[in-house]
Amino acid sequence: MSFGKDDIGWTPIMEEAQRATRVLHPETLELPRPSHRRIITVANQKGGVGKTTSTVNLAAGLALHGLKVLVIDLDPQGNASTALGVEHRSGTPSVYEVLLGEMSIADAAAQSTQSKNLWCVPATIDLAGSEIELVTMVAREGRLKEALNSEAVNQMDPDYVFIDCPPSLGLLTVNAMVAAHEVLIPIQCEYYALEGLGQLLRNIELVQSHLNPALWVSTILLTMYDGRTKLADQVTAEVRGHFGDLALRTVIPRSVKISEAPGFGQTVLTYDPGSRGSMSYLDAAREIAERGVERTTA
Image (cartoon, rainbow, N blue to C red; front, side, top):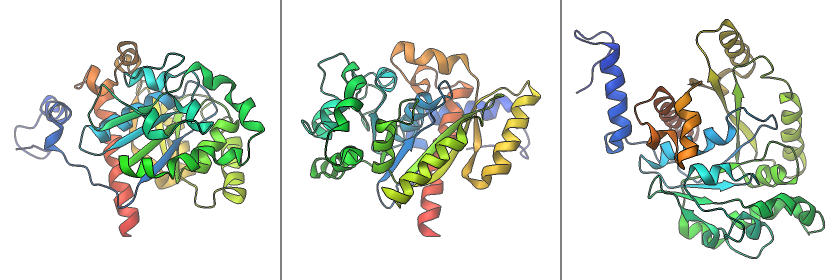
């Protein structure tokens, strides 16, 4: 049984308790399965905007509710691999070997400790020099796309593929955009939020024009929201005014729990299921899943 604000006996604590229960017992909430595999690149060349954090927590939110999710860690720092509890020491099978054509994605993928439905292709330090090696290769911008189109990935049959990009607009990020159908852009609710965003959008347009006409910006996610400041509301209003319905209704709050979780090799959904950050990411994952179904049926 659930209560709403108009029901007698409703309290904010009761609502929070219900939301925490949905995280702790994911079988109580079913998210719709997409009609086709959704490949989403999470990109923003500006560092510190919650890009990797959003990638792993959205992926975990979908996976906890029965959807099969594959995360490809394309950032040499390997932070997504850490948060998903996947080994990424040098020598571990990784996305580096995948890009060089030495290994399939299925062989490099490891199951996350967060969910039986969640897999990750880790990034090792070897990836740091990969852009130089890719320069001389044939079809260098399409290496990841080729790997994702393999029969091995079809056998894994993920519903969602999230690609976590490095904080740059280099060849790795271009590979991610060529391989994807959608781009999700996290934007932090701070002063310089929109600085550099124009360059990212221009790069996306270039990829659309020359390499991947099907690519489009499907989602804007506002992160690090601090309701105590007027600035956060101003940035939120500006982003919503510019991007309209592309911006999710859910905003991700600034949260100590979200920051702490990767240090324990976890997403915030498993580290502290009842926290505001955890429930916000769960709400955002649900929005993404529902929007995908709405667009395919519209």
